[in-house]
Image 1 (cartoon, rainbow, N blue to C red):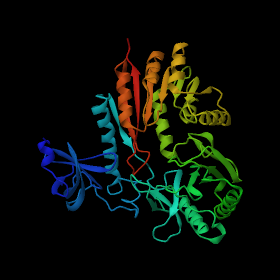
Image 2: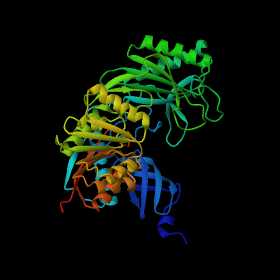
Image 3: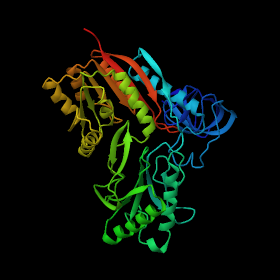
Image 4: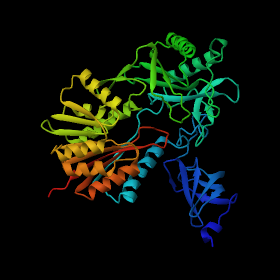
Length: 468
């Protein structure tokens, strides 16, 4: 027999709903007949009539039929592609409300998943700039359903249906100018052989246009991601790149990345320089960096600098101490703290990133930092076994968080404090709970908004080892 709650609500039923919370995906949450009902593009405080579109055992999904009383958090969306492209989920509410929601999502993760209560919860620091804050974009290439011309844009949510977008509010204005220049060129007879790649048939040439921009330097890299680098294709793309460089003097590098596989992965393994330099330059936390298409780099430089400064403050560095930076990427966090620690060791599994980290240290004249390529857990375990005893460990893991090998190695090295930076509050809470169950205390929790108007949120925590 089906549960009574499930039979009380049916598909296409109209129900009254009061929205009381929000998810990271931007769905409002209300309750009706014992079911949690999720409704996109709603806000806490909305009084709605909702049409049920899907019913499951303990929850349901709906769409707005009527907004009877709007939430005071509601604002008019400022982007015509909102609700279509899937990039932003919070453009229908004020930024103040978004920050409040994100801070609550992080707090809830640590409370409900980690069962932790930090000694101090600091206020969220939101983004100081909401528009043009990203320094990187990867635009799929396709055919516009409206014009039949080549176009660039973003995929609709949970699909590979292309939504044409040139002026994304999250990207610098110059990115839109470059996109329009490319679209016009690809529609001309001169570039007739450079056709958009079709995922279904595997035919066509141009898969993505990948743009990077140095936040401080302003230098731009254009990278064509193509299904082939046959000489005639490479030459056409070189000509297009040269045209772009003449139109936009900020462009210092035009690259060709080759991805011949039928895959969702954007970049292939081969990259050639078509015009200009092979890399662009920038600085992060005062450290000079050099960027290739494959370089790991924080997408919102301004917020990254603020977050790394906060991580440094929480780390309480001392000149005689050793810092171990696990999942170090291109070394940005460790190098930004190197002036305050006696020695820095960075570990990262991506060898290219370690090469970038070493080069960045050399450019900055930082001589007290060393970097090791390998799995964070395996190398941390080796350090623990040979008696390496860092005073402070910084963890900046991927979304899946740390594995137990890494966490156990951290425990064995017995640092006095651990600073964790995370882009996934759920895994951060899980990992913090593991460390706190084995001798650490959660001292400080702070939320940081790297990606305004989207569902992504970062956090930084300070844990200290309990005194025996």
